[in-house]
Picture 1 (spheres, rainbow, N blue to C red):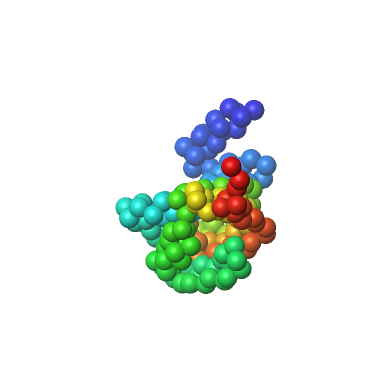
Picture 2: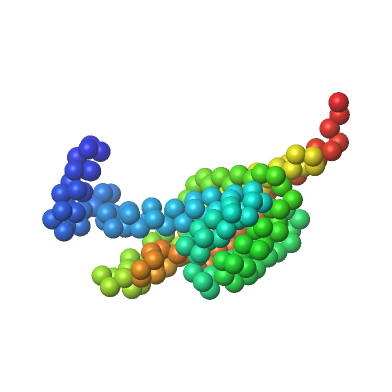
Length: 188
């Protein structure tokens, strides 16, 4: 079945036809996958910034510049409930670097991702809009002090930018739960 679907998709693409699976066009399936990868690259960039190594921070910044529009609104709360809201990827690098600089390692894991595709871009690369919900489990480690576990949900709005592709223009991270484990009280 999968091989037949793949083959029909390939033939359809070669012939310029729109092929569908479960009522969704190939273009829509590809768009949804591209959109999901925005949040996955975000997690990777955030972990690079969390290494506290200058060249990794710059690599993370480069990814942020690819996945966010230059005027993106980005908001989140830290484990203490402090709210952050900035505009643009460079300002978000400052927030992330400041928040993660106290840890020696981080890992941001994405679970369920749901993309609601509102419109595909036209043949000229104009238009294209979607929203995405992504579930997060983030682990932050300070070897001498704490382990910080943060559970949250990203709510992202994306649009298609001609010549670049899909980008996030509005992202909000809502904390669902979390725990900070104090390692300094560990016994012998």
